[in-house]
Image: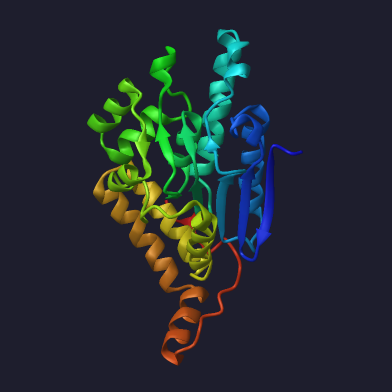
Length: 268
């Protein structure tokens, strides 16, 4: 069985970690499979959103594969950490929104993967945490950087230094999911409903929003506003907005054409 499977669901690509016997732990094969799946989604103009999940209800992913890590020396560990970060960065920078559907455990690298997604939907039984300090380790796939940016440095540091887990309700309260937790039986359907709603929007507009948010996140407000203005001007002048406005005035559903490029690359 492949470590990561993909399934086309209309304009949404479902990506599933396929290691339930290992609580969907992130070994080399899984990390490589996730990167390939995201690259495939970006290369296919028919894909407008990704739903990312793990096989089974026990774990979205319980983290890095400790058996694999235990056999590594310092140099090999450094290479493995760099590869893990590269995959997380690939997810975080995806040209299409990635919706992580988290059921059961999302610990260590599993939580870091959820943090890298565009946003997360949680089941009521989800349990999230970065427990590495209890093993004499620290998060290595972006947790020390993405979690503070998501919930603030004080709370993130507390969670990492104590190894405290978050249940789904607390994670939602901290802003780690934009929607309230749902029953496990409804999780994937809920994630797909959100992804389908994204897929119904203008695909170039969605990509431009992602670019504007990400491009302005670590810069000044003025820099972000400049990026937004350039992208917004391109959108106004584009065929996609012409279709959207015409459909609105005609009170019909817009027929957006698949495609990634709207001249955004000309904006710096």
